[in-house]
Each structure stands twice: as structure tokens, then as C-alpha cells.
Image 1: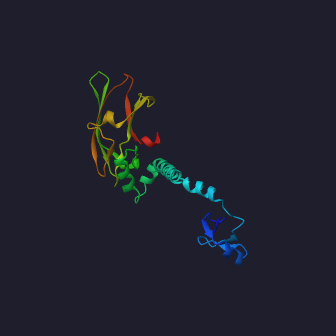
Image 2 (image 1 turned 90 degrees about the vertical axis):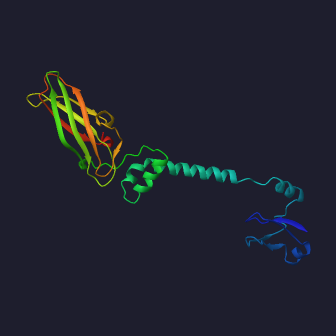
Length: 210
């Protein structure tokens, strides 16, 4: 018997010597169908035994490659989480994932759909304290991140004296990161202002556009 190895698929098998003589040494591999000369690819018995005793372990490399691919995919999803959340079909999936694994998702921003309702701004006595009261409403049909509130102080001639912007945690009576569809929150902000201030402007702006 002759031990030979298919050069195409590396399968080992034995061939009867008399059969080899009858076909001129040519054999067909039973695994891949390749035809080759058995004598040319003859394998030494001792070498074959050593090969079989130390099989090649490919699975750790396959597992590592799969983990690496998943990590890259997760990074790509994390980077695209905000634009994906703006797509109606993808929004529920992204929100569900980000509730399970906090990912700092910035909810879709339609700043024009936020309204300051019944704003009340007044100067408290002669102490140069400005008190701002209002209700913030999200008129959008989806949940949004609460915008920042900008306060601009004006001189008597309309020139800008100062401007400051405030995150939600400083002006909401009950701080929250987002407002659901039709949601409302109470705005309360008290500021010490310069004596030269004669007017003000209030504005909302998205944290994503800072």
C-alpha cells in the first residue's frame, strides 16, 4: 500500500500498489476529484503520523476574527447612532439598544418644534435680579433632547451687553434629558444682571449644533 496526499485538498489516503501500476500511477482524489500522480505526492509513514498527532488548530483564529468583526460593527453602529435614530424604521431599534447599553444617544433634533409658552421675564426690585418663568413644550411627534436656553442682555440702545447659555439641568424645575411628544416642562431661571441692562432676548438652540 502506498500513502499519498492530494495536492489540491491535502487529503491523505492509501492506494494499492498493483492498482497504481495498472493505471500508470495516476489516481483520482475521492474528496475533491483532482487527478494526480500518487508516487509524486507519496507521503512517508513516520511524517504522516507526526502530522496526525499535531492537528492544526484554526478555530481560535476564526473566533478572534469574528470578535474583531463584531467590534468593528459595534463601533460603526455607535458612530452612526444619531443619524440612524432620525430614520423612522431604525429609531425603535436604536433606542432599545441604547436603553440596554447607554450610548449617549442624541435624540432627533427639530428645534423649531420646541416652544417657550407664556414666558414671564421681570426684574426683581432694584436688586438687578432677572427672573425668567415659562413652559417648554416639545410639539414634535417624537422624543427630543431638551435644548439649551440662551439669554442675551441688551443695553438701552439695543447693543448686546452679555450672553450666556444654560443646559436643561439649570433651568428646568424637574431636570430631564429629553421630552416626549407633546411633553412640557417648567422653566425657572434667576440671574443677576448688570445695572446697564435694559432689555433681553431668549433663544433655544440644539446641543448638537453648538
